[in-house]
Every structure is written in structure tokens, then in C-alpha cells.
Amino acid sequence: MSNLDTPENAMWRAKARKVADEVLRPLAKKYDELQEYPWEIRDALAEAGLMGAWISPDYGGKAGDTPVLDLCIIVEEIAKADPAIGVLFAVNALGSFPIIVGGTEEQKKRFLPPIARGEKLCAFCLSEKTAGSDAQGLKVRAIAKGEDTWTIHGEKKWTTNGGAADFYTVFAVTDPTSRSRRISAFIVEKDMPGFSIGKVEDKMGIRAVPVVETVFDGVEVRKSHLLGGRAGHGFKHAMATLDRARPGVAAQGMGCAQGALDLATVYSQKRIQFGKPISSFQMVQQMLANMATKTEAARQLVYSCARKIDAGLPNTTKVAAMAKLFATDVAMEVTTDAVQIFGGYGFMRDYPIEKFMRDAKITQIYEGTNQVQRIVVARGILKEADALSHLEEFVPSEEQMIYEED
Ligand code: CAA
Image 1 (cartoon, rainbow, N blue to C red):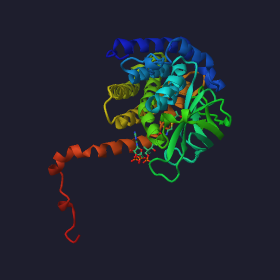
Image 2: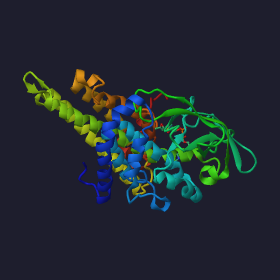
Image 3: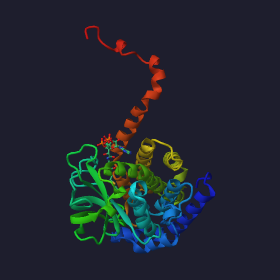
Image 4: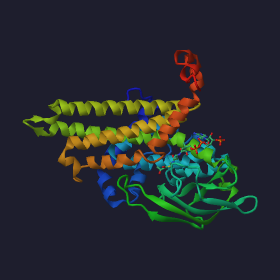
């Protein structure tokens, strides 16, 4: 619990924690086994008023002054109980962000209110079989038919929330000859002719949330569904969306780490070996101390990133990537150590701890692999390097670093 919570942050945290403790934790095993979308959980989240937390009251939501931080706090509290529901919540926000960051006023008024009420769910269709990290390498095409109609052809891969969602933001190539205006984004509704769900994936973790292939067989969309009403801006909309969404995945990782640490702490005090609780052994204490320190560091990075985005600071791309990569690497480390502390019990499906480790793995992969995040961070550092020119006299000059014969 962060004692720096504002009254608004504390209100969202309390609401999310209540649903997490009363509804999510008891249902986690059921949906992990069923691998089906948990509609009863969606209903509980909507009834608690959580679905509109990040959407402006202008569009039917309940966002206050710090919508990104509040979203992170909600996802953290949910992920502590069930990390799969953490992504169920965060990915719905991800699906709505293209409309929030790039939609026309008309699109915001039409699509956001039902999302805020929890009546409609959304999904983000960027990745394809041959375009994952290389998000510009898309093959799905949207072919213009006259001035204001396009037909979308092709398949998307790894669509999280697919099948459950009503609205899909689809990134497609509209101008294959252009370098910087190649891609456009469209809002596809689930009952549009030509849209269907393909392969439903069988997953290692986050099994409560569907991940599917989405198929576009000549789906006809009008200009009303072209994001922002302008073709050629899709890639920038995708990147701006991810800048806003990555803190949510970071919060999922951090909440997952905290949930596993809490269980390991409780277990370590109950488990007696050599006549004492294992929590009294320094090797276990060292593990708990490292796990707690890393989780707290992740929490502070996630919160500080979210506060920067909420304050409207420029250039938050780098910090969003830092938060995502750090918090999700911590999730993997901490959940693995938590299983280790549980010993043989940790490896068995009888207890939820092994699920935390399975759920953690994907957080290092989706919304940009942690290798891609490091590329984004490094590019950010090098872009800002001009501000360091006053340090040049303290490093060897270029002349000092060449051979005479060169
Ligand atoms: N905001 C706005 N514009 C941006 C931007 C940003 N953050 N980042 C880049 N751009 C712009 C650039 O300015 C550039 O514009 P110009 O052409 O006008 O110069 C253009 O976009 C191309 O930028 P880059 O040259 O940097 O692009 P790149 O091809 O080198 O790719 C990348 C960069 C960071 C690797 C990017 O492709 C990327 O983020 N890849 C990962 C994709 C990803 O995260 N996929 C996740 C899918 S969603 C998901 O996983 C959801 C789920 O299931 C839960």
C-alpha cells in the first residue's frame, strides 16, 4: 500500500482490492482450468464501477486527475489476486487507447461511453504472424474503394481479448509505397461482415483471457471507422497507444510480483524445517528481502512513469519502456523465487503460486518484448544526449582516439 496515495488513488485502490479479494482470488483456479473468458468477473468489475476509471467524464467515464496512475493502481490490486485478470483489465484499456489518443470527437462520443459502462470490450490488433517486434512490417491490407470506404484483408495474430471484444482497433497497410504514411488504423465492430475469430490459442499462463487470431475477409469499413478520420497515421497512433498502455502491463507485472511475495511470506512462516519456520533462516530472509526490494523499486518506477504521463510531460516513451521492462523482469524473478521458497508445494497445481509464475512469463513478451523495450530506452537516452555536451571535455577527444597512420 502506498501511503502517498491521494484520496482519489485510495478510492480506486480500495474498490479494486475489494473485488480482488471477494471475487477474483476465489475464482482464479476455475478460469485457469477452463481457459474461458470470465463473464462473471467482467460483471463484478463493471458493477464496482472500475471499467471507466481511465476514460474522461466527457465520454461517460469516471477518470479524475490521474487516470494512468489510477489505472495502474487498479491493475496492481487485481494482479495481486489474479495476474490473468490484471491483463484482462489492462488490455481492455489498451484497446480503448487508440480512440482516446487518436480518435475524432465523433468516434470518442460513439465508442467510449459503452466501454466506460463495461457494456462493450475492446481489443488491439497490431501483431501478425510475420510482424511482431517489427510492427511496421504489417501485411494486412486495407484497400480503398472510392473516397471513403476501405476493405480489410488478412489475419492478425495474438489478439488478446479477441472473441470477447466488441470493438477491434486494426492496423492495416493503406499505402504500400509510402515509408512514413504506410499504415492506417480502423475500428472494426465484431458483427461487421467478413470479420471472424480464427485459431484460439492454448496458453501457458493468463488462461482466463482469450488470445486468438482475428480474420478480416474483405471487411468493409467507412470513414466513420478510420481512426482520426485520416489515413496514413496508424503507426504513430500504435506507438502513442503503447506509450500509454505499457505502464498498465508494468503494473500487472508489479502486482503479480507482490501477490507471489505475499504468498511466499505467509508460507515461509508456516513451514517448519529443522524445528523452525523457514522464515527464520537467513537464506530465505535474503530471498524475501531481495524480492521485496525489487518489487518496491518496480512499484515506484511504475507510479513515477504514470504520474509523468498524467502530468502531460513530453517524451514519456522512454520511461514507459523502462517501467514495462523493469517491472515485468521483476515479476518473472520474484515469482520464480516464490515457487522456490514453496519447494515441492510450489511446483504442484494444488496451490496458486505456480500460476503466478506461469502468468508472469508473458508480461516479458507482450506489448513489446523486453528486448524491444531496451531498444526504445537506448534510443531515448541517445536522443537526449545533446544535453550532455558540457561533459565532452571530460572524455577522450576524437583526435586522442585515432591511430597516427589513420
Ligand atoms: N510515439 C509517436 N511516434 C513514434 C513513436 C512514439 N512512441 N515511436 C516511433 N514513432 C514514429 C517515429 O517518429 C517515426 O516517424 P517518421 O517516420 O515520421 O520519422 C516512425 O514512428 C517510425 O519510427 P521508428 O523508425 O522508430 O520505427 P521502427 O520500425 O524502428 O520500430 C519499434 C520501433 C520500437 C521497434 C516498434 O516497432 C515497436 O514498438 N515494436 C514492438 C511492437 C509491440 O509492442 N507490439 C505489441 C503488440 S500489442 C500486444 O502485445 C497486446 C497484447 O496482446 C496484450
